[in-house]
Figure (tube, one colour):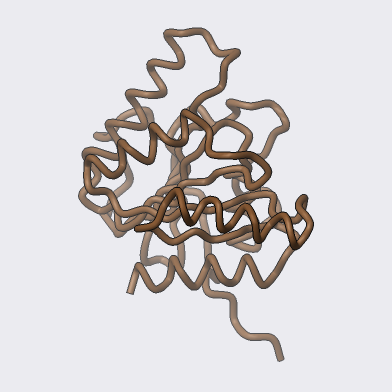
Length: 195
């Protein structure tokens, strides 16, 4: 018999464009953020064992609002718009930036931010800025290296070490939507934070 998944119940609640519209009741929150097309929606679907709960797209910038998902009737997963996508009009980029910053600064319920980065690349300037910003506001976060299945074992170990050196005070977790062990590992890290 297979063990019960950690996140056994998930429901999309609502999308909001400002803090005052966030869902009631207020519950602990885990936020997911990263550059456009880093795989946030795919990660959420894999973590929650759902096919299309979070809408995925090959077009960067699909998530334009803050999306709330109720998990196990106890807490929210919060999917934030991707940042750093060059092809957006400047005013829209600034609007998103304000939306993300406003959420991160004003959410007393936020227990952890999962900062997603593509495992295939070195630390991007926008990711470094986001990490510095989280550090400045004392927001706890972990680094999730997405698309880990696209690297050889050897290369993944090198990238893991590289990112651990970049973020010595934070957990760095490899993740692939195709690897059940990695999915479970991330789920356990999040669960520990919520306990």
